[in-house]
Image 1 (cartoon, one colour):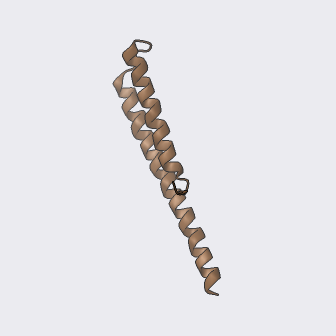
Image 2 (spheres, helix red, strand yellow):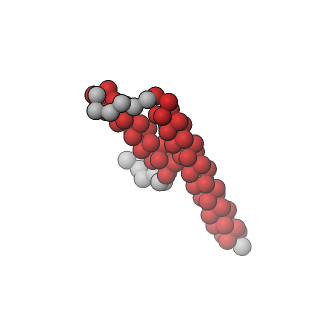
Image 3 (cartoon, one colour):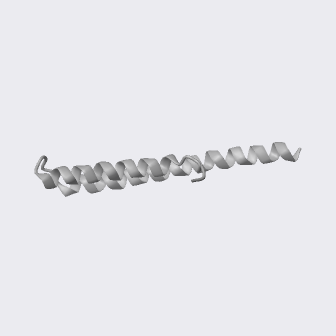
Length: 74
């Protein structure tokens, strides 16, 4: 498998959704009593946060790529 660049937004989205899935599993097993209206905002907030992290990562990498291109043009 070829190496790929690290994508923190996708990592964060996966961790949040895994946590929400784990909470639902605990609720289904009877370990906790978890109301749905707490989980939905948690999942949506995690996805929004992951989107923000992904956007910032893209902007930083684009800026670094542009700087490298400018220095090689000179």
